[in-house]
Image (cartoon, rainbow, N blue to C red; front, side):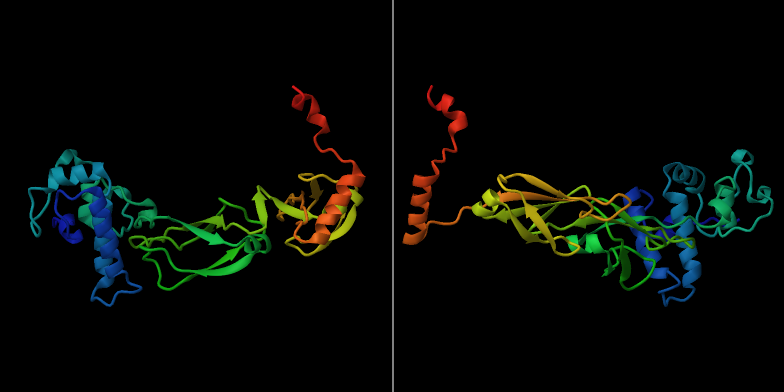
Length: 300
C-alpha cells in the first residue's frame, strides 16, 4: 500500500513538537474546512489533514509511525510486519473514513463508529451585568479565536438566576472536528461588580443609608430590589450595621435567595450655623454618652 507522509501533509518537520503539530493542524483545518474553503478538493484535503493529526497527536501512535514509516518515501509501498496486528480487513469489513495505510499502521483501530474524532471543546468567559444575571438575557458574542466550526457571532441565552462560575454549554460551537462533530463551547459566567449590590451565593446584600431620626424613631421607607421597589419598616432604636432580611428577594432559583438590608446611619453635616445650633442643643438636652459601656477601660 502507498506510504503516507503525515508530516508532509501537516507541513511540519519530523522533529516538530506536539504543540507545533496542534498549531499546524488548526491552521490546515481552517484552510480546508469544506464549509468555508474555496480550495479545489478541500474536503479530501481536510480528511487527509485530520488523518495525519490523528496519527501524530498521540505520542505512542507517533512513535509507531516513526518506527515503521521513517525509512519509506512518499509513493513507495509500505508492508507492515506480520506481528503488526489485525488489519483493517479484520474489522468485519466496515467502512472507514481513514485510509488503508492508517488502518494497517495502527492495528485497525479508529475513532468510534469508524469516523473521524470529534473536535475539541472550547472554554471561554463571558462577563454580564448583575441585572442580566438576575432577569436573564439574550446576548450575541464574538466567536472565540481559533474556532473553525462556523463564521460569525454566537447567540447566547442567559438563564435567570445564574451566578458566578456557572457554565453555559453551547453544543457544537467548539472547534471543528476532522470530518466529525464539532466540540462544544463552555461559557463561564462572570458577573461584573455593581455600584450598590453585592452578590453572596444567591443572596443580595444592600447597604441602606438612613437618617439618625429614622433609626431612633422608626420609619417606613422605600427600598430598591432587582424585582422592583418595596416598602420597608425600620424599627425604632435601629443601629448602624443592623441587618434586615427580605425573604425571596435575592436571586431566583429552586430555592430563591434573600435580599439582606444592612442599615447605615448617616450623620447630617454641621455645615451651617443653624445645624451647629441643633447639634449643640442635642448635646445639652439628650444627655447621651455613646461610650458608657467602655468607661471602665477609659478609667484605667
